[in-house]
Length: 492
Image (cartoon, rainbow, N blue to C red; front, top):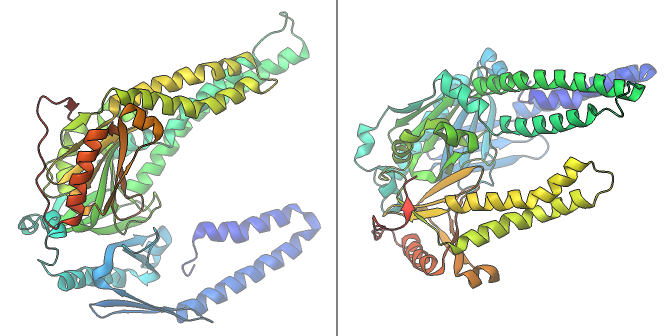
């Protein structure tokens, strides 16, 4: 409806009408209010649409908008980081699309968003912006830092190359092992606990209270039996709608990502603007030998729905895809384990976070025995998770990339190109200093653009800090000293 999101329309207009209908005599008044809101919204959107203008001359994208107050925006093509064309189901039926343009200077949201644009115009404008950026920067404009990452002579060979395509099986597996479905065990555990409490009999007599508990227990069992398949089905349906025909192609020095069933989305991401790559595996995917890969760019939006994510890859594909996302990088470098002192730090960090909820469970009156037991067991469980996290802590550096791995239930391996590091921070708390540890943070552009090396040895942190400062200030990436094959560490 002239660029008004359907969800916003339902929340703002339909829901008040339903509430008004339930009010009885006040329904007529509610209907009038809703009608006026529809009229004002429609007129406002029509006026905004008629006053909206955009143009692109090959160098500058200009947008003029506003009814009462006019806004004039100009965006130089050289600053554009990411271009995305989105088509909702309604837009596809009407031959329309939404074009989003993002820059490194954006605050995590689209710098310019052109809604209800004819689909052919949106696609043509996206290609014109891409060609204009190529003309403005030139094939050798990304010299030094960015050209080293963009692939150089390999760009012609990689033109139009398909990097990866998601099969239906992968999309389904990514959906049912994703974070949204992983809350199911907690729901089931709480339900089973409630079931156990509800089915306790008092003295073996079938008093009304006991009968009520049995009926409640049977109803809860039915809910649980419905909840499990419903959760899997809903997660599968959402994954198929979102990632249907998920494809990543490389065209020249750009990544083209397309996906979607009813609503489709096509994004263009320049390879030279990739700032950080994260390989993520939760506890289920680690057991299955699969992972998800998330790509952060200088202009990437902060919302999960717009971030470039490869839904599911096999472990043996990780190095190949890292090389495709970061040309010139052979894959995840050898990772060196952190000193044993980091074990105490990891356990302390987890136990400290568990003390407050454990104390609350133990102190609150009226809690049943199992919940009080949970409060007593929670610190010990947290200590075990700290040991698991210590086993995953590792970092490494090659001549092109810095890598760091961390996490317990969900393990993330981040890779930041050295040429993208804009600053380095080294911190050490009093607790870390006593243990001879330090934490290093490499800052890159874009939302969430930090790579943290947690609890590494103080001497190693100093050496790595100096090397990263040189890499951040020098257009030529210095070759790093390779890790010794006998050094403690592991290959991800």
